[in-house]
Image 1 (cartoon, rainbow, N blue to C red):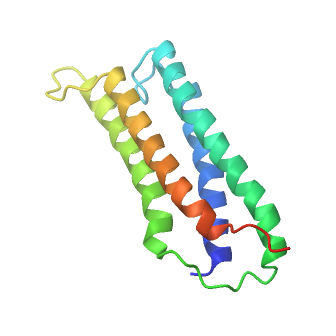
Image 2: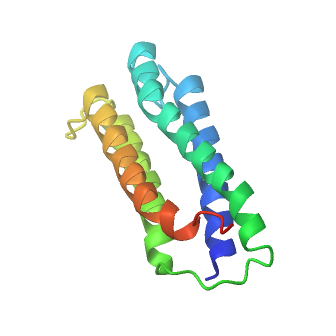
Image 3: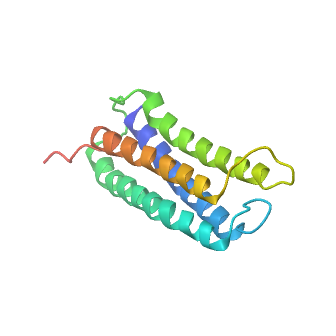
Length: 147
C-alpha cells in the first residue's frame, strides 16, 4: 500500500461513515431500525458526528498539503495496511453490532438486554478507537511539508 492509497482510503472512509451514521441517527430514531428515543439518538449524534467531522477536517487538510509534498503518491506506506483499515472497520462493526443488539433487545420476549445507554457507550467506544488511531496515523501518513 502506498501513502496515497492510505490517504484516499481514510478520506473516503471518514466521509462515508460520517454521512451514513449521521443519517441513521437522524432518520431512524423511534423506529424498528433504531428503537430508542429521539433524545437518545440525538445524544449519540452529538457524541459521534463532531468527532467524525473533525476526522474529515484533519484528513482533508493533510491531503491538501501532503499531495504537494508527494505529487506522484508513490512513497511506500510506513505503517502496516492493517493498522490503517482495521480500526475504522472495527468501529463500524461495533456500531452495527450495537444497533443490531438494540433492535433485537427491543423485540417482545427478547432475552437480550441492551438499551439506549449501552448503545451510546458502544458509539463512544468506537469513536475513542478512531481518535486514538488517527492520532497515531496522521503524523506518519501526512508528514509536514518539507521546505
